[in-house]
Length: 188
Image (tube, one colour):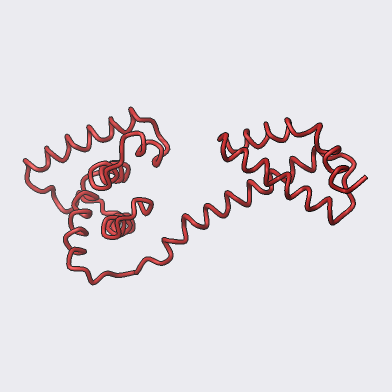
């Protein structure tokens, strides 16, 4: 009997369990199917080069789990890699204008309100996209947007508040300014 046919006979009883586990990990039919196929291929390559395990099911589960962890880590690195290439300062003439607007908003609004408003009004995200990005519900996004718009209208009609009442989050202001200037909503 060839190595591939012995591999198939060892793996065949566990295919449904492996597929269900891959769907459980990824929470997606498509990603689960990809992970399932990748795990089977990786396990077959292992069996071709080494002595096969007698208890195959835990081995297949471990291969799928490790592949999923590696994929999640790779996505995380890709997500944060574009942030490292951002310049530390700007010579753009719009920078001062955008920065002053963001500072004005940061003086008056909580961080969550500023980020929600920027995603909605500047980057054009839908309420569902904002909820997914900020990991909250759509009603929560609507509530934050309603309060933010109400406060902005109120301050547009009133004079500036006193300087001692301001709470500027300098790092957030810089991050939000970069996101606007470089049109990168993930920087929020």
